Amino acid sequence: MAKPIQKIDWDSVVKSGEQGYLYCVTDPPHPHGERRKDRDRKYVYLHRAVMENHLGRYLETEEEVDHKDGDFANNDVSNLIVRKKGEHQREHALNGNPFWEKSPKNKPRDASVVSIYLTSALDVGVEGVVVDRHAAL
Image (cartoon, rainbow, N blue to C red; front, side):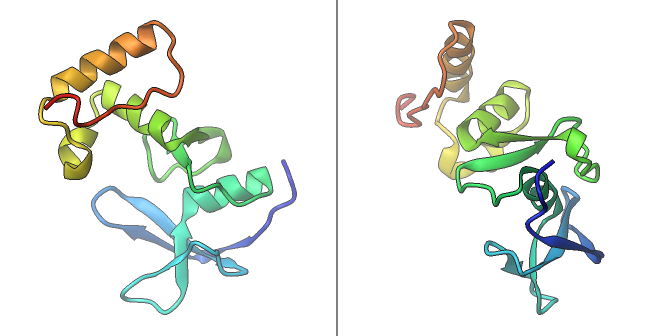
């Protein structure tokens, strides 16, 4: 484990919305933190802060942290994995997560085309597959 880059204020941890992600305040304030409507401090996802401390650096904009077991309350570093955005979304789409249905700007007209494309691309070992959402038009 690298030297932590921020101190997590464990007393500040709050649960958010329907999905149950946890937010926290860091010291120094996180550069990508957001002000919550009901609070005057900058909050960041707890799983991101935990992983950043583990890595000893802030995450890049194209990096996301995934919970291996799907439990958003389990923010132990052994349950977290860093992935590139496209790779993270592709895995959730292939595993039946309704990603395409929830995000209209990413939803192609025919999701089955995307599913077939992603599955065949993964079968032949294509890395970094980019899906053209207009290809199914």
